Length: 304
Length: 269
Image (cartoon, rainbow over the protein chains, first blue to last red):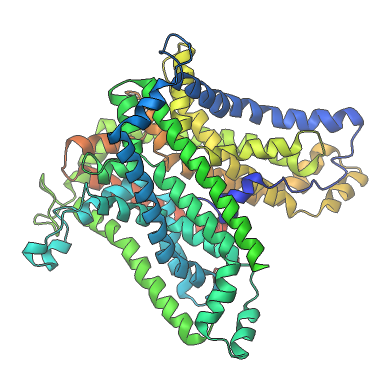
């Protein structure tokens, strides 16, 4: 549900666009500070109550001795990371998310190219087909996939009986679910990095004798590198922190980290434990963002 | 790219587009089963479960709750986001970059962390978790988008118009109403719609903060599906699907929603 410029990880670290000096900004001195303070105060209040305080209090509880005593106790983290079951699920979550990201890139990159370069009438239909799913609830899309991949699937009418599929609650269902639901983000990201590209540059390279692959490798891919890296980061972060899809498609059969968090918090009611687990995936995702940022900088440096 | 290569790309895009559609078509097919079990294709066609869906008190209640939550969080997000966007676009003040970064943080923090945080905040204050928590979470989640849209909208205005209006004797209020607002209205409306749809489809915060009587439609559907496998979920999801696609189509015709989503000015119109 996001326009691509909004989803790039760079965006959050880039500075705000410089203010435009207008008559509005040039009021008497007191107004120059008071007005923006008044405009931004409500936002800050909201952010404190809905993000800052909640996140900090959850983090604090995850290292507290119990829900009633705030004596520091980090043993939960040690317990989780020392337990082979938890370690396995965490590794499984990271690997599955990375695989889903790679698959999304492979499927989505040509679509991004198409959206950026095509001018035909079909393009509108394709854009509609790719983007409207973003507005449909993940639960609806995930449920639809359980029908397509489950035992009642119409695919089973076509396949011979011994190959009949029932992929729900397997790794494949989770992977397909991730690719299916997060594809639009990748397409948008790639498309965004290519929209400003002058098409004549590609035509020039071709007319000077460069082949298709050469142009793709030397011009198109380097130019879209920021889009690729931000698309990958977004998809991977979404995959690692999604609850609805693993619930519908993975379940007990293919555990993902977020399902364990869900169980701890909502079924077992061991909040400190669940929060600690959520913090662990948070740290993994932040690491991923940093990595994406670094790789984008590296790629940009090389293409210059 | 040559004509031929573009044609290959077009075929690929159409194939993927159709594949993306397949599960939804299968779901629509599943929803017209009349019996208690889903057969594909249906053996006994009929719209019985649509009737069941719109008569199911839990689902209707959840739909109402979803709509109210989405409306409330969209309204808050627009008011707060436009104010913040305006401050960032038009004023120099200390902490301006910090404000911009703060507004964008909800994008960086996984929603699950926000969700459990809201749970913990309510519990540490000794209040039972309530819809206000969900609305606050959804408002924060929409804020970055609304603010970005506002910034883009204001950025496109010629600032001299404002000076001209003021120097011709317009009061500030008149100037905002007749010069600034009409120019940023598309951005503000887009932000409103985007925030509404975002809240409607968000599931993570909704799962963690749901209580009996205060559960959004997607979460209610998940609950129902966990216990029963009759076509009710398919029918309810199909209604939601048709409504969303219709809304997306109309919004696209009216406001160019898809152009907005794709950040693409050459949608071939």
